[in-house]
Length: 304
Image (cartoon, rainbow, N blue to C red; front, side, top):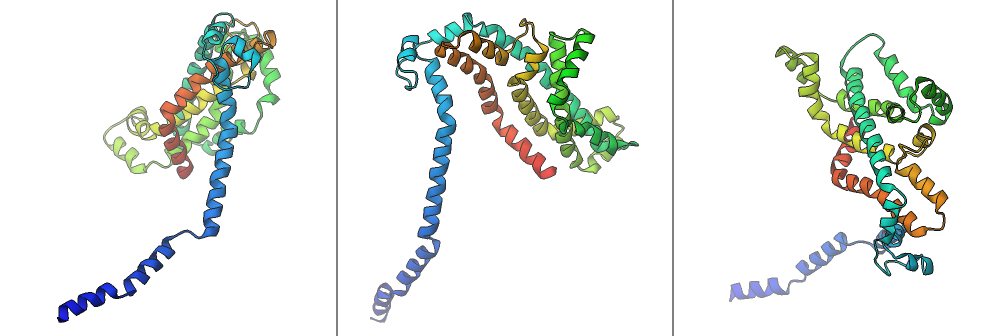
C-alpha cells in the first residue's frame, strides 16, 4: 500500500511538469528574436534572388530558340534549343576565343603561383639584409593602380616587340598578380614552426629541399587558393587583352564578347550564349575547388 501511494504521488506531482514547461520556455526563442531571424532570412532570400536572376536569365536566353528570344526575351525556359550556342561557337568564333583565354590564363596563373610562393618563402624564412624594405617594395605594387602605368607599359611592350603577342600579355598579367600573391603566401610561411626547418637542416637538407619537400606541402591549401583566385582574375580580365592584344589574333573571351556585342548588338540569343560560354569554366573551377579555396583564405586570414 505504501509503494502504491508513493507511485501515485509521483505521477500526480505537478513539479516535473512545471520543470518541463520552464525548460521549454528557457530553450525556446522569444517572439522578438524569431521576428528578427525571419527578417534576416527573407533579406538573404531576396538578395540571393536578385543575384541569381541575371545568371538564370542568361542561361534561359542562351537555351531558347531565336524566334522565342525575339518574341519574349525575358521569359524563363519557355523553349529549348542549341541554336544560339551553335551560332556563338561557329559564327562568333568563340571556340578560338576559348582557346586563347586558356593560353593566357593558365601560364600566367602558374607563373604567379610559382613566383609568389618562392618570394613568400624568401621573405618569411630567409634572413638577409634589407628583407623588410624589399618586401614592402614588392607589396607597394598593390597600392599603384594599373591605370597609372598602363600607357607607358604599352610603349615599352611595343619597343620590345612584345605588343600583340601572347608572351607580352602573359607577362603583364603575371606582373599584376605577383604583389598580392607574395603578400598572401608570406603569411602562410611565416606561421610554420621553425623546428621543422632546423630539423631538416640537421638531416643535411639543402635550402631547396627544405622549400620543396618540407615547407611547400604545408602551404598547399594557400597555393591552391591563390591559384584559383588568380585564374579567375586573369580569365575575367578585359583591359589587358584589349590594350596589349589589339590585332585580334589572340583575342580571348572577354574582348571577343565585346566585339561580338558591337557587331551583333541585336542578336540577344547568341550574345547570351557567348556569355554562358565565358562563365561556365570559371563556375566549374570554383565548384570543384571551393573547399580548398575556403580553407586557404581562412587559414591565411588566421595566420596573417
